Length: 391
Length: 210
Image (cartoon, rainbow over all chains, first blue to last red; front, side, top):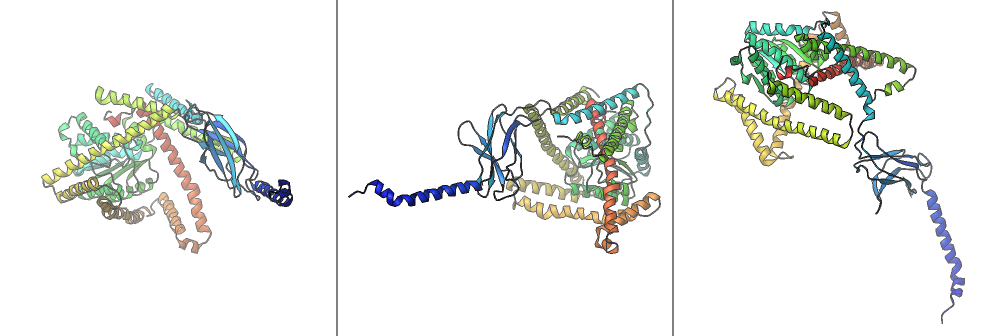
């Protein structure tokens, strides 16, 4: 016999109701443990980029920082027009931003951000749609542009002054004055001249300056018929050095004296090169050593070996960490910008002297800016320093 | 010097220099592609430069062996090392535990470390020569060097627990850092002005011209 449902309800109803109520309380309690979501989610185009990035910014969840519902991080989702959302990042707790990269320029994207906790994720904050766009001018580098314009302007002005006949004073640089003396000493002693163009590549300015000074030394060795040895660390530097030395001998009208094998590649290994050049110094015993270019840890090995054989040594580098070693072991050292001034100093060409003077004027501008910044920093003006930050 | 050896290289330098300066200020996609392409070309040229280097080594050392130069045994060793390492590297690869990798770890690296370790002795000889007090500057240098040496070892703290480390800290933070920054400022300006001279063709010595 089938009992009517009302009778079944009368017997099991209160229990069922109790179970449902307890379940609803549990859900409500659990949801009460979930963190509150972040707010004010904004999606904007990342500035000064190539149109492949969007920047998300939000206000932290109120539960971020402390409490029973403490946020442990955030989950950032990219929401396509159709389909499931994709997790693209998990910034840590405290984060208020995220950058989505490798996007397509012009395409709209939407995002959701959830706060995460031990109990689970919060409701999602929704932002977008926004489309990334490429920019054609990097506003964050305007200060660099201004700096280049100022430097160029000062250099150009002084080049024009020099070309119009203005007498520009350049202080004596002992290392450059000694170049001809060193070549003369080697000629008198009947020994070779060793020229080391450094260990940086041809794209380094110090190496280019080293090549230019090599040209001058090569003209002197061609004139005095002194042996010149140029061991190179880089094949491209070797090619450039060989051409420069060859051209110098041609200019002096002594092409038959040029030995292509005097400019040769040794190795691109740092200490292998140092060992080879050290051995060359001990065997050939050059009377004059020139170290012009970029050097690293091997500088002291080269300079000390040269000092041990009694050679006159002239060094020039822009590596400030190696300057102390060269100053210690060499007779003359061109420090940093003195190496860059070499061509102007040796040739005395108006255009080159003018650019040197322009550099000095730029230094005065920089000194003024440093003093101004120091004074303003004393009064807590951080905005001045921010003007010089480069993005 | 004519068109090919002077004018064309100067023109290439000018165009490349100006283009890459302008590129620095344009973040757009075509600009980034141009920059990536220029970096790739630099790597390609560098790879071809390796051919030049090997050619130079072969020519120099083969000639020494052929002419029975005084140093010909060392040239033979150089050539043997080049051929053996290249053959093993090309034939068996350079991954870990390959023969070329064995040569690198058991021959090249110890030799490299040996030459590097010579620096310790050279620093001692250079210091001995430099720190003889003959001028005021040498005296200042010696004082600074003694302070740094004592400050870097436990003896300094034993002599004076606070004065020596604090003096060293002051020396590095103020005078040394100030001097270093001054030198760096000059270097940066020099690089900028020299780069401008090279791009504009005012500086031509690197091409062999006066």
